[in-house]
Length: 448
Image 1 (cartoon, rainbow, N blue to C red):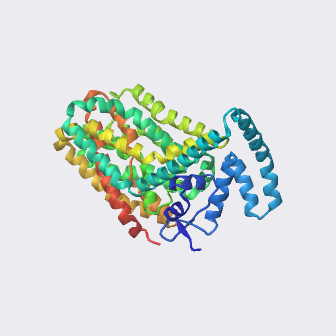
Image 2 (tube, rainbow, N blue to C red):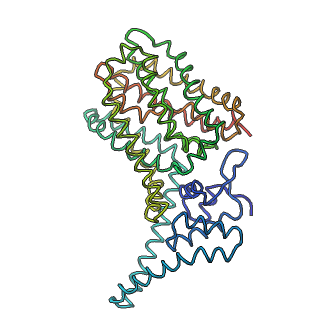
Image 3 (cartoon, rainbow, N blue to C red):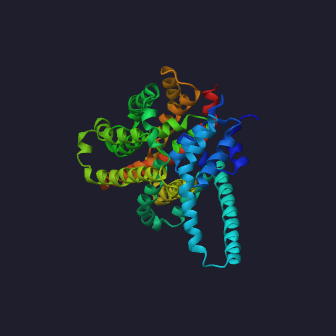
């Protein structure tokens, strides 16, 4: 049997692509990389999935499955039996307890009802897997649709902007929880031990990017343009941690490395953000910024989702209920991102339209940034001697910015700097269109 792409394996087994990626992050389902950077699975992948499914039906935890799977791969029948016996005894005990509770119901009724429920679960699961696979495949178009929908609603009902603005934080908390939930916290240590790639990401985002931003922002430095400058600096000096994973993965990049490094990038940008503002816009402007809303936003949007995600992963490693929650959240990632984009754009589109003249320079900077950073990312990849998937990941990491996370910080600025939030939204619109082009052309720039 030839190697299978993730979409082919998903179609052949009925297991959603999001679940396959989760199994890979947990070390249950290894994947190789094709010359174009896409995941490929060997001929045993379907057998491994069948084994994992059978083990899950016994309510084995992920660590238990991993242990038994290792023995199965080594063709050690005795070891597999030894690993399964405790779980089987526990499973049999639970089954007997359930049977005892159900004996009060007539046997015929029991068979009929449970059969219907089982068939219902199978059909529902199949439909859900098909839906998830469809929106995973069409997610770029769906994101653009969400932007258009948000713009249409916000333009048609400008008085609703305030309501949408209040909805930004709740949807962002859900989005970032889903994003952090995909971060394999147990693998972060292993990822950071890849010192060359980690150093490349840090150098790219916290040395090369500030130099590029400084050069590009000279056209808006000074006088009233400082209002635009605050927003530009705020968004361009914050590397993305959410949809960069999606877009880089579509381009065959090593998105799992960016995923594992997301907490590090988030922490560094929060620590360095006050320094960047001071260096780029001056102490006088920084002095009017109240730090309290920034701290509140950091705790609410970063610390809380990160802690919840870590707790959920800990639960999933011990209980199947936690694993099911992770699978459900992963499956809902695309709709959650769509909702977030629509809410953000609906809340700010009227302000963007009313200040289009002031935003022209910012939009030009954002376009230039995307063009320049494509070449800078390739250069850093070559400097640190990264392979093709890693170099593509660096290109996306350097170009995508953390606008959705930075926006609440911009909204927390004093009224005198209110233009900053509109600048951040403008960057989101420019970047998402740019990412469609990146997905198409970065594989050509960084070919095998």
